Length: 569
Image 1: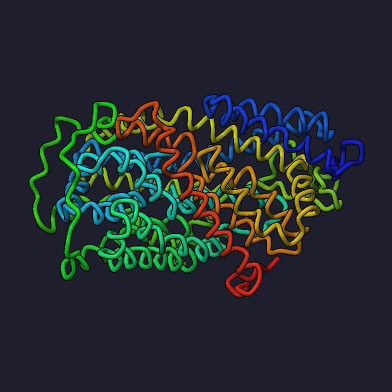
Image 2 (image 1 turned 135 degrees about the horizontal axis):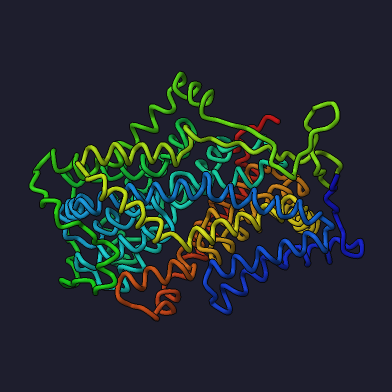
């Protein structure tokens, strides 16, 4: 039996917290200072967490290895299972030419830079974030904006800043799913649904102002004055759709629904209203080869798309419409019950649970209070988000008449593109599980809460922001800091669900300054090795939005506490 110690280092909570933070500090220094590749830094951080768990916390080596395996497995399924299949669906539209058709449809709507910033960077970028994430939305929208005629650095800045509002629900809800997984061992009541509801009551406040910020970036005060009606409509509609979908439907398709609904509403509005003095495109420009490669890839043997009108529109949005239909069907009560019955397996993770002489399951890990730590692994296979995406992709193959060999090759290509991302995500989640199950995260949370008390509500979004800024992933930041937020919240007398969601929602403001996203944006617009120029253009916006969001969290911890969903143990 292993009991997580509260202050294992010389009986000092402060010293113990300092050692507990060592794997994270090491990870951040390797990424931020030494600019080491993310997958290498994550592996080194993982090794450090294992050593600290065994030497500092006294966790048995076999148990530490088992915790590592559980975290890595969770990273593979469901997290990477979601990402791989999401990007595969996107690849299917690329190789058949329908992705290019969708982009051209959007670009043909207006030659006003401010409108294109809203439609491409905000709306279409959000759709890409919903399906892929991990830099794909920035790369695609930046290249599209530049190809349409917007200056390179402006294209990069607009795309980076737009990639905020959808990130908390990006990649088919992967960040919220990872957050739930990170805290479930000690707080099983903080389900994916509850966390989704809370995040859905935070991110709409960010979404509501992002389009206004975008038009300001493109055209200053003049742009806001002339286009505020459409910018405000886009932000409010997107936020409302996020709230409704995350609270009453399902987390996985929150951004898919929000982006498509917003595109539809903006298009309808533009039929009846347009800015009086449009801002023309800077100049006709063609992305360099590297940038073009990010948005090209159509296979030659698929004929050029000649459909017009309604057929062309439905063909362009088909994959996303199919995803919505498949996920909606899966949420029908009778279907959901059936899938739960045959598509879910729960089992004690080997090495972390033991069966007693009476045949009953007994936890081998106790928290610092002597209570058992839940280590039952829930494996959803048929009803998993990734599986539903795979089914959506197969249907898309039939709809687009994709050859089986091309579909398989696209899947292989997706794996190759994500190979280092896979290593990074698996390593970060393994690190998170080791820290959580050994008690390192609990010590950090207790130390922060003891020092800050109710002021922790101010720090909570900053922690999420820091995690995303360094790792480039809201999913990874949630895995790293989710349990820390919950532990500190309880110690401070704050709502655990509020602080956990603040980690995810607050983290999105750090996405635009993460080294990974900056590198993607720079490559997409042909500004390789000029990431610093882009960084200086967006860092103040990142901090400003973080401050704005922090005020919201503080209010939700006080006078707006009625917005926090009730959690039943």
